[in-house]
Structures are given as C-alpha cells and as structure tokens.
Length: 186
Image 1 (cartoon, rainbow, N blue to C red):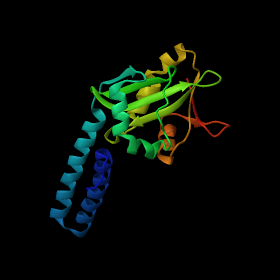
Image 2 (cartoon, rainbow, N blue to C red):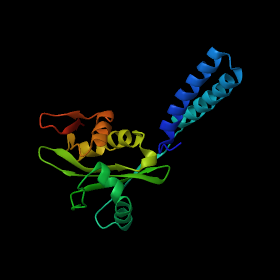
Image 3 (cartoon, one colour):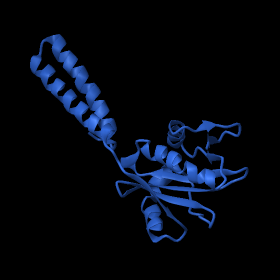
C-alpha cells in the first residue's frame, strides 16, 4: 500500500492474489481462493485499462527565462537531484528545451545542447513520478527524432547521472559507447 507507482502496485497485487488463490485451492479454503481470484480479475481489468489507454503526447518548446519552466524546475529540484545530481540550469541560447505533455498535463522536461561531432548532449530528461512508465522517453526519442536529424544531429549522448537514469536510458534504446556514455543513433 506504500507503493508510489500505481502500475507496480497492480502487478505486485496481482502476483500476491494469484498465489493466495492457488494456496486457497490447495488447502481447500474456497472463500480464500475465490476472494483472491476476484482480486486477480480486478487487477487484470485495471492493468488492461492502463495499457490500453490512449494518451495524447505533445511537446511544447520553451526557452531560457520561461517563468513556468523556472517554477517547475524549482518545485521539483529535490527529485531532479536524485536522478541528475549536480544539475543546474545553465540553459544557453543553443539549449533545446521541451516540456513534455501527456493529456495536456506537464509530465516532464527535456533539455539538451549541441555537442561535438553532430551529437546532442542531454542535460536533463526528467519525468514526474506518476509518469515514470517509459512512455515519455519513447515519445521523446521517437517524436523529436526527425527534428533532431533536420537540425544536423546524428546521435544523442547522455551521461549516467544515477543508476535509475541508466536503467531508463537502456530501456529507451540507448547503448553504452566506448567512452562509457549512453548513446542513441538517430
């Protein structure tokens, strides 16, 4: 009950209820088995709804000095530091900054700047806790790919700032290059 991720809660609850249903059937306790079988059905129903839900993703480009962006980054500064230790806003004129919207709610911020050899270096790819299901990352690197290529970038480079961020990068298609950085070819 203390899980912050509703999706993880549903999966764990499903596994627990399935085990208790089997246990109930094995020891002949039909009320235990049937109640937990009902819970399995409820969890399956809600998991289906979560995965079948059609969300509308959008990006809103913003730039340095945007008051909403500044307030968002200030408000979530503590959580941002967990995934991007030492992150500071040093957005220059060449920094690409996007608010990621899911059903018109701000779900995260993506910031990157041009690097050497036609690469785009990610400085922040932050997602709010309730949206940490990898859909934002897949959307960013798929939806913005054409724009990045049009602007002359052929790869995206990200530094593993935390273990969780490294796992996220791998799940969104990044590989580790010879310099120990995460890289995604566009």
